[in-house]
Image (tube, rainbow, N blue to C red; front, side, top):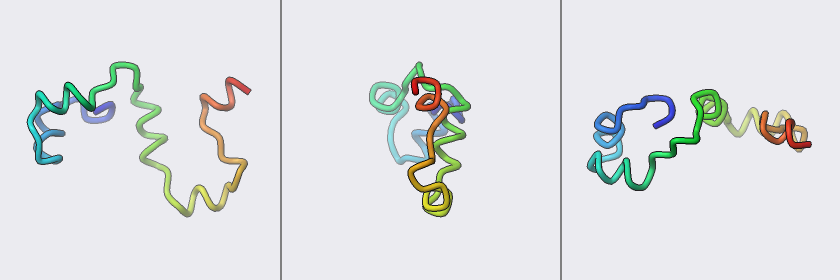
Length: 62
């Protein structure tokens, strides 16, 4: 939802109703950059970085 911002499109892709998507999956606090970072993750990326892999939020709080 943070990337697409269209409950009807997301619900169609999920096979659900827009009201269900908005009730259970919409998170107003998720930023588009966070969503892009999440969807860029893959096993290869995580394995190549090992335990050094940190999100921006983890780096800021450390």
